[in-house]
Length: 46
Image (tube, rainbow, N blue to C red; front, side, top):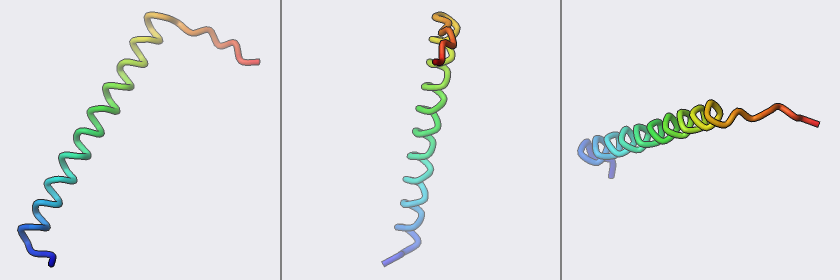
């Protein structure tokens, strides 16, 4: 069932998915930082 080819393909798939996820996270972080720098949100916590 777990042949070397299948295992290598699974590892490759995991690496690609984690890379896409990290890129999305970085994009969201930079976007939120840009929004905060452009539109400074006042800390008006009740």
